[in-house]
Amino acid sequence: MAPPEVKFGTAPKVLVAYLERRGPYSSIGETMRSLKDWIDSKGIEQSGYPFCVFFDDPNETPESELRSEACIPVGKAFEPEGGVKVKELAEVQVAETRHEGPPEDLSKTYGFLLEGVANQGYQALGPAREYFMSVSKVEGPGSGFLLQQAVSKK
Image 1 (cartoon, helix red, strand yellow):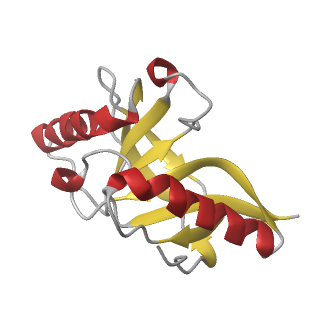
Image 2 (cartoon, rainbow, N blue to C red):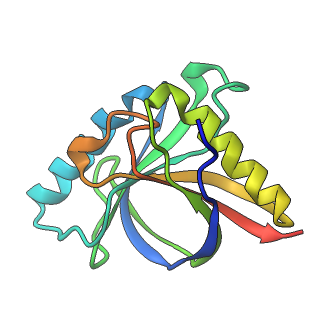
């Protein structure tokens, strides 16, 4: 597997509808579909690609304790209901790369991403995001098209 290109840029602030979950990352697709069904039922307009936020390293955290969020960008705030919440994610510097290959190779792509971060004099901050073309593509980590990691200069 050739190392993917790591790019640096800025992720703009974004308003998202989101659902939190705890448990295997492989089940995030169910959470995303529930979120999409809810925003559709409320007539809330999706304004960008859906993405998942992964807070924990699955090599260090028990599967039952893994924390993640299914997020869908929306055009306007709404009244939270049930487990569906709304928040604005701040603009942030990011390193990003594309994952190509089977989901089981995702850890290699993350390795290349984090190596690129360190080699360019940055440090990783907070959770990683994985973007998907559509909600139906969310099948768990490694099925998205773009990985983003918040960074800051060392």
